[in-house]
Image 1 (cartoon, rainbow, N blue to C red):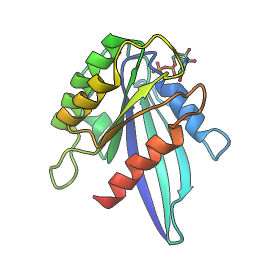
Image 2: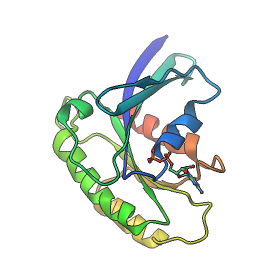
Image 3: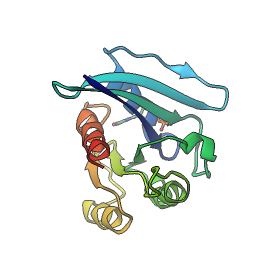
Length: 174
Ligand code: GDP
């Protein structure tokens, strides 16, 4: 049995649903949350990925960031993948995704120097008043090198597991 330890980051503006996403994903499972003084938080979930592989996911959520801020390299160190999240009802949270992705491309590298795989997540798709169209998200996602994008609703538990699985699959295939 092989066990992979994967550090995954969840970034995005404040209030887009990052903490709710992590909580939804890990709840009901073995879950340990550490509150760290630097304002970063990680939770752990163990996945039985296949007959021969287990995946221990460390999900790192940045706490208390209302707007994009450039993160320190320490936060990015060792990360193998990232969820870049925005709120579909907030165009400013969507605009910030460009900065989040640029910061990742500059600082979060795989040992071979490549950028880490990132999935773009459009959360709160249960809400009717959307501020960003699917077409705009799709173009942005392709132009900025995301592996793909996905709509989620943490509230309705839509695509939370699927988005994470897609990212893990990409990480393990690299
Ligand atoms: P964070 O600051 O990015 O960690 O965001 P939070 O997880 O604290 O969520 C911010 C607010 O959005 C909270 O009131 C959540 O209950 C709400 N929220 C999170 N996900 C969803 C969702 O999918 N749909 C709706 N309608 N509200 C959500």
